[in-house]
Image 1 (tube, rainbow, N blue to C red):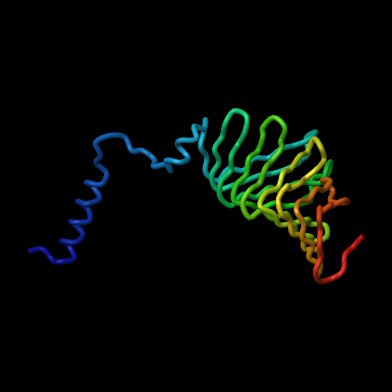
Image 2: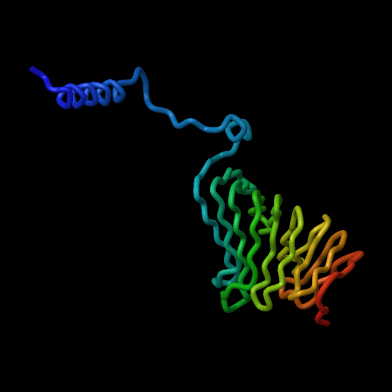
Length: 182
């Protein structure tokens, strides 16, 4: 005579056995949108680093990466960190929903709720998109920008800065609250 506990255990074992039997090889299910992009490779949890003369220059990571011959598209929780030239300590961090890294130039485009945090003084710049241009020694945005500098809030139509953040220019800027540092 079978007990209800023994019957449940046998039913569970039979279910697991049948679940392991399939007609063909198992296949990972990929979002059709990602599959349609035609990437050479698809990676999850990718971290990519760039160096200059053997010293860490930048690091970019995201939940999903579509890897092409000339670029990598990052999706979900993208973090782009830049480092001080020659010494490799963190300088700034950009977070966004999406990013595109050009493999030839190391230029990076961050899009979607983009936030730039300048670690030296805590300034924060928010914009729909940011472009990191290492060969031009610039980071910029052509979209509406808000910079938080202590108690001051500066809003403008776009911004540009050198990569040391010594000269941050916000076009058509207007301020509210706090005082500005010059």
